[in-house]
Image (tube, rainbow, N blue to C red; front, side):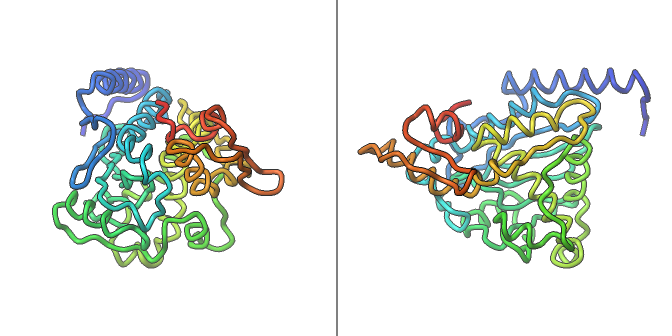
Length: 300
């Protein structure tokens, strides 16, 4: 393979990234969903991650496309669905590429609630969390054209993923562009189902925690997107991407989205407090929804 080093390499990558961003804006390389992705359909999104360029504009576009891929269902009766639900919804597939535009991994999201349900390795093998819905399994099976789908020995919840981390390791909260790249490649290099359900599962859990924060939770919460933006900048050094406040916000998602559903359908709910201790949130109006829950109110 021909390699181009130094300034020529950076110039080439910058030009490619600029062209890719323009194609996305023009809708040339990403099949668009009008607002949501119905059953038996998949919305595809491409994201090229390169430490030598500023990935933020493309990252913002990816988050917007994730919201569009699930839009109407988040506005409707399914905004509070848990991981085991999400029936009659399609799939949102986020393809991640490295600096050389080589496909690394595909992340699978339930289109009814933007939960990350699994991923596909570089070999084409799909892996799903143990609590992925039957509907999500059918959609992923369709996307991989009937190839076997492996069930991971842990669920996709925050608690389950943290408990699967090796040793006394905790959720990664300080992340830079190279950590994102490394964990993306970890999913890509998942050797086989035996390793994924055995010695390699801690690496998968760590990588999926990062991907959930960077994409699923960034699509739901302004705080997550804004914090993760710093990690996608050119040569970005590690910075704090998950705070205790954000962790409290994440765990209140189900209750908060139920409150918003009541606000939409009427009669208006009474103001409510979510979270606990010093990490709490008050929802009393649409202004509060704008502040905390970007995906639900359809903001792009």
